[in-house]
Image (cartoon, rainbow, N blue to C red):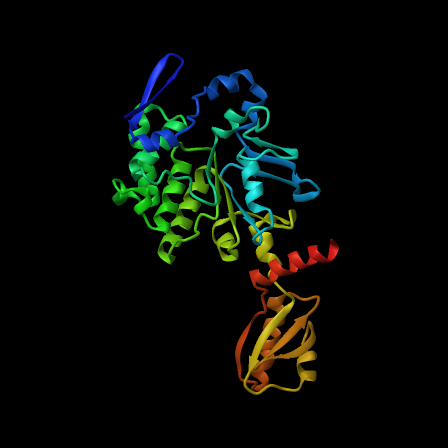
Length: 359
């Protein structure tokens, strides 16, 4: 049977579905005129040019249990924000509130200046969302699923085919057009989920664990796609994979027990990995006193078959140059010298453990 609906006196036909699919299709979002909304709200229209997401003291509680506690941040167009945290930290709850799928207990979410509570339809129209479980009708083919998503997101009827083709190409689904979603692997089902999130070319794309279930090649491709999306849109990426945040994000937030424990640029997170120590390998190590006599060296300790030098006042480069000169002059057999950086895992553990100590 044909699935059709009427809006403003016009009849729209989606495509042919079997009766089971039709019964599951319980709601179809109405079209709305965002341009008219902007004209009626000029202050909101002006703010859409820069900041795409404004979150202020966002809180969600279930009784006395606070799941998300006063989370605040801004996101600009063209930025990729990594929302990082362990399982159960409040990531998915925050994503649901950002996309209007869960009402906050308090606080506000604005998408391009449009308040999610006051104008939910207009705000949601600017968002593409991939929840933790891809929202698929598994008895539909990939083309049918994406065509449905396009029409529900308000893509004009004459542009649906082009939008579907573009989303498939960007997510590597071109060869899967006629396959039923239920017959796809977990990785390809995830790709369909991403495709339905970007099919209407939204201002903001929210991806909750987008690389879950993908093989290494697919992960590489999806990460490249996220970077591509970040060139034109704002992207919020929820994940617990630390290297993924470093590879694709401009901004990063770390949430633990519902509270932000880090909020800043990815460069600040990388800088936090830098330490005041050098890891030095010497085949003929001198006495520690000789190393302590070098400019800037304040402490020397054994680190396996190497030495760890802590320095003060001088920069790492300056101290390293002094070590190299002394090693050459003293025939110490220098074979390794490098900053003793902290891993992302260690930074994450330090931040979350610090939060545990203060709560």
